[in-house]
Image (cartoon, rainbow, N blue to C red):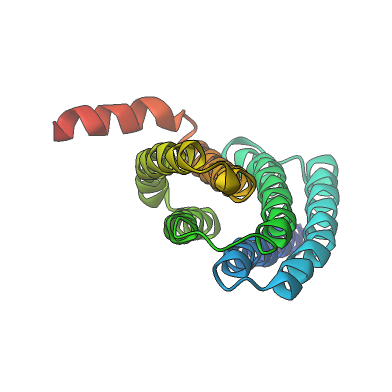
Length: 232
């Protein structure tokens, strides 16, 4: 009986490790897609943009694998408490990662159009925003893979910086369009890219909330707001 119990525990741990490995692969893929999509604008490299678009299928396949593995675990292992939150959290996190992959694909498609227009100095602002979002996303993935609730809180708070930069960039691009109508097409494309990056930040925040709930069994939002109040 003891050997059977040990076998079940070992099998369950292997299933969890498989789930974690797939999330790691998926996270690494979407992170590189975001970086390359922004680089395609900065370097005006439409071939790189095409590569990003083609890689979205890899992300979709990984999500399907994670969903299938997680559902199988729910059906066969009947996890409870923290284990249940971890498995369900993997499904939810994979959904956010898949959406980030879609946003990266959208940025890459827009990059191909932007690269046909005259280069604007504000493309540097988009690159800065891309770096900020990359840091936020990487931190969210680290928190997810290491089940680090403290880092999840940090990620949640970082989203304010992304939102502020987006608002600033939005105003600058509108000013460029009003000053010279010839900038409208390129600026519209950059606005689209900036909005997608802001949404990537939102999905990174979602992942942080998933991690915190998986670890503690309670919502992150109230905890993070209390931390902010304490810092004031």
